[in-house]
Length: 213
Length: 224
Image (cartoon, rainbow over the protein chains, first blue to last red):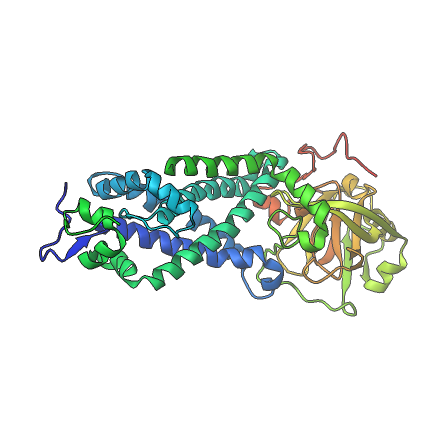
């Protein structure tokens, strides 16, 4: 295992530089997509004031570029931490399933990422794929039958609604959990935080004094 | 589990693409254009404009100029257009990008009736339409312009055509995709060859028949 305890043994590395870089690239692109989506979708209210063609182009390019940092963060020697985390969010214990079914009310011996984060990763990841595919169908509509285009329009809209909710929830939770947010900037979290919020991960990292709840 | 969620959501998206059109029709018909217009699966208009803002033209100052290869070039006021025999029908508005609004009520003058007023000369082949936005343009062949469901429309959805919908006067070419229905119609020029319009210069078919045929004439225009 890579030495994830930093020198002073008081902080653990939660995110590698590659992961943080990818995260903020995706965040900026997602923000731009959401920001441009509103006037595009509610054009009747904004039509008087904006340059629609330009906004549509920004939306298109941000959408096309967005998968690049995601895929890039998984590749090569720099992608190792991301690949390990991806395996981690894909692995669910029975306790975690029970926790999600109880809507987070049960106590949990939490992994590095809690089940809500794991679910969110899978949802947002697949949504990117769906938005990319349906967005491409709307842009290069000539290649698809009209009924597909109608379906792609509906799916792109419906997923946008859910993604807006998911992203806003993500930002609200990040602002409520400043230590977690700071770890996306600096890369590390205090061992105290890990003991409190990720007990299973703490044990895995050799913080032996963590009790199993 | 994560993989399962990922695949399920992706499959849901793919399924939505295949059946979304029918769901949308169902939801649109059940909810009507009011509530349906707010929901992602409802039938709603989406507004495009090739320039920044929607042109603002008062009804009083509105003019439609018809010139080119005609015997009597004329500039119509809105009242003069309304004085011509009017036509009403209800038709689906279908956008080339995949949204549609069913049962839109239209009222206006048949384009063929407008052309009768100016008397088109021999040798004329096509029409070029210009918009008050100063950039958008469209084209129709003379034969297409004489189809019975091609309107110079001044009412839509039971009311005067709104500014956002291209009012006070817009084109409505029922048998073709929405981009052919030029908004804020300012001028019609009768010309001797088809001049591709704004959207056609950006890759859309010049003959935008709803059934996807691309020739100048449609074997099955599906007239009412």
